[in-house]
Image (cartoon, rainbow, N blue to C red):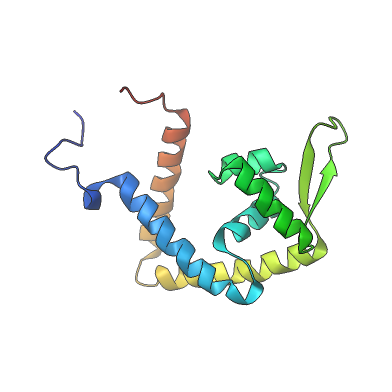
Length: 154
């Protein structure tokens, strides 16, 4: 039996709405936390994704962060101009341009990573370790479900 119906589907009970609002609120606070570094939350998200080598190109980075490809390219241009990111042609396929952090990019990424850790520890201060682990497990499960889901029927 389906969980959602017209009787219980409202913004405050919609998983999608709640996840989106939580993301927006968190990113706004990270923007403030990174102001002294001259970065935004999405810029740091790109830097940390590059740091963990999850997304070596602009296109894969845009997909990973659910960001427009053109906007991602412009953001990488800015990060490259600031000396935080560098582009290099792929050794095996010169059509691909890989992204990596410069030493300065690694330093700012690590400083901001500590700020993010502090933010999350503050936001979750009233939560038990079990509650946090459960939330993470549920979000990972939701991500896996959405990644493998068929398109919704119209």
